[in-house]
Length: 385
Image (cartoon, rainbow, N blue to C red; front, top):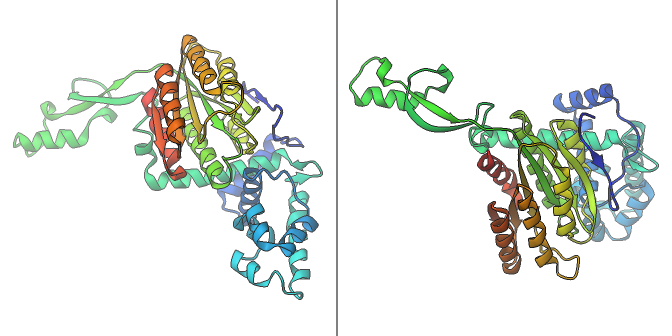
């Protein structure tokens, strides 16, 4: 699709089935129309992927719930169990051991899991392209709603196709959309003018910019699971939404002990959305491999930038920290800058991250909560524009 290169490697999450443009449109319409069943199915699939669950059968889920419900909650999560059964977590916990409830529980599990297959969202091999796309569209809708609540324009630092608003100057010529209305009014008031005069007009100048290519380097090692992975994905979607709107290409390298998923920088939002949605947390953190892989994805003469998001130290190789610094140095020599977003980093990890962005001539954002990752990513995007 387009010029996107989506390639799955060792720990890649493999989806089966083909998705036609008309199928994609149907999924999009169902999400935009707030179809409850479709949205819940998308949430269910995304929760499973974020927990590293590739598929499930009614009998297995039922057996785990009945044997040890507390352990089942840890394995699947409260929301996923609720989506799979149609019952609230509290109701399940109170009734799962009651003999009369067990047949009803198995029936509900069977009905909902079979419905996924009937709707073409799963098959015998796991989640299909349609299932992953639906889960991505639900993430996208959730993130747009979240950003609209914060003010997308503020979060994106007032980016538009013409560049960043820079300094305010006296209006001479140009477009009326560039008039700085508040500053114009305050100037007129200060001068005692009851009506606006031409000399009162103030306008924004704009920093012109070329195009950019960004690779979102997403740590998908074992520690990046559940809500942390969900928020990291939403941050990637926010980046894609803002950048592609400005005709800047965005790519993806998701990594654990290998490359989980990669998408070359593209303007194809749906290809990128599917790539992000399909990422599942796996094993260790091979940052060196991911950095070197990202270098291979850049193809144009646009400004090139890597945004690394991770919550841990690299731990693959004989000297992973030193090798990571060397890999960033290689990126910088190729004209690629590197910024990093660290989630709850240890002192040692933060020191390494500082060194990486110093060599990569980027910025470090150290956050304790992953709830604001989207705003941090958008802030970094504004900085490189």
